[in-house]
Image 1 (cartoon, rainbow, N blue to C red):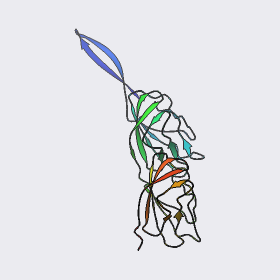
Image 2 (cartoon, rainbow, N blue to C red):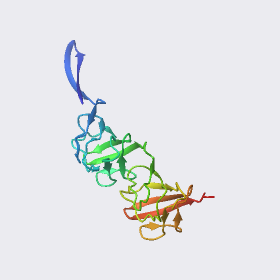
Image 3 (cartoon, rainbow, N blue to C red):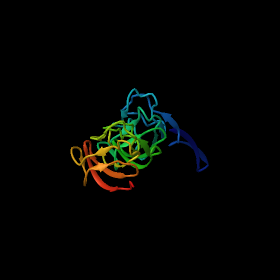
Image 4 (spheres, one colour):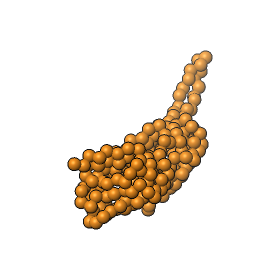
Length: 216
């Protein structure tokens, strides 16, 4: 925020008026702060020194009517905002390094997502992973595995997200069964070029929305 002094001339007399203007100042959230203060700026960098992935649950000292931009700085101990509660958004938000989102402050404890920009869209699922982390990204490519590998769950899913899993190798290709946490039209064999689309209905609850079998 910045104060601005304006002189108004009325009836030959100058009157001093102080107005408060919103300034696009840049600030950084404190490490491990789940309720960061957003009164000092309109653009905020997430803390890069969080000791673990951090979930923001509220914003301190919000200015009603303001728009704040939050930019991710760490793809390991990332910053996350879950939909619901104080935050109105189509799906959970995870800000990895370079990702950003704009929030409109409609009231104290009421923040609406205006836009998001996810730059880390494509991620690689590590070899032999059976519960891959899908917090950051939208497209996940499987790896060559050293043995039979069945994916049985997704770690850190974003509720409301649409996830695409692409087969990246024919070497012990990852598979997903139509059972447990996954509601599929049939089992999925993640051979190279095969694609499975999933909707995250809830943690441990994933629906197939489509697939493309492109393996020769």
